[in-house]
Image 1: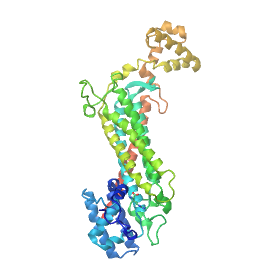
Image 2: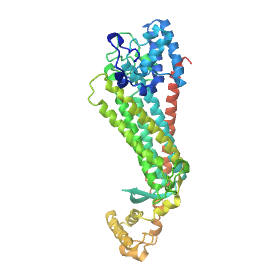
Image 3: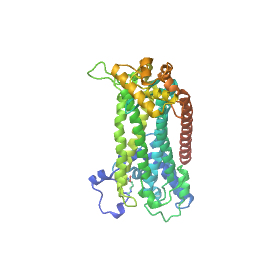
Image 4: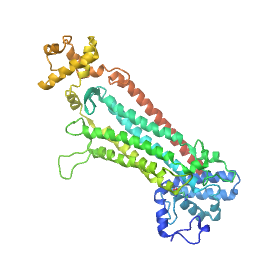
Length: 482
Ligand code: ARG
């Protein structure tokens, strides 16, 4: 039998069992139990301060809610699956505990503003968790970069050998990309930093509530401006689904490379045993499954974004029950992203870099051809002409099984009489790397400068996250009377 519905006054009969099962959201929104209690604690404190409900009732409600908070924190909240959602569960539990005074909690609010408030608080913490995980990965990438400022490997375009780079440059490229992913979450947190509570069902309320007070108590910057917008919009959810998707795409790129790099064809890195798996049939196998799974999970994370976009498309104002479908996709995508970034931080930190294989690989693909052209430019040959000369030299080497470093000087002279003995030093890969001193380039001097920026960015963001976490923690303590 279904428990007593919140709206039973207007109905003659109870709900069909099937209707209850179809409409319930408890499986998913029970993850917001803690935030629901915090929202109610803030609300009741405001109702008391405004004299909207008697102080004795407010105190009873507060005591009851604080007890429920303890149960939630201990993971011992018992859920009644005949009550459709977490809001109903907690309110019913409260009333069972303290009697009719519990019925006064819902004065001047609706589940519509309640659910938006709870979900914002949930996402806020989940997003900060994702940022922390991404930052762990960035720190791992920085560590590999620090240890490999002079490790040379081929840089690729079109996955073809292009120009030599250092591993530091390559790792920092990923680090900066992940830095933007993390910053995107931080920016979105600012945009959603307004409290829905008090918007009520859609039109606000007749009670003289203090929305600034509840907003402050729950750690938001301000109350939302428009009640209809507040209960009818989920762009904040979609934005986080997008941010998670972008970060997942960055992860998938890193993973794709590590899958290639750990293959026998590349042999650039060896995965640590702790982060590899074997084969049930092929005894020799050591597979980069974590990278592959992370790459694969990108699909689900992007799927969540598409779910949000399509679910909210064409919804009229204000609240529609469709909006109940917003939680699972984004809760899951933020959790998956966090798990992926956390484990990839370990994969990167523990992999072995095979420097010799990287260096040996730069021998192929005429990776120093641009440097040979630049050499001719220093002899006053226009770059276009130099490009053609080197192109002809590469073609000759290719058909004769030579590298540019093997080509005898007398042969070079046939391509251009301006080429001298110093060409060989000039086109050595390390020399090629060291000359790329432009801002953002791959020379060790340049990557050292990048490293400082990357470290500072990480430090700043880590402090911002720590500050936010401490602030929310203090909000909860205040509400719990601790
Ligand atoms: N379970 C609902 C949700 O997640 C709560 C809001 C219900 N509001 C309503 N008008 N039925 O959206």
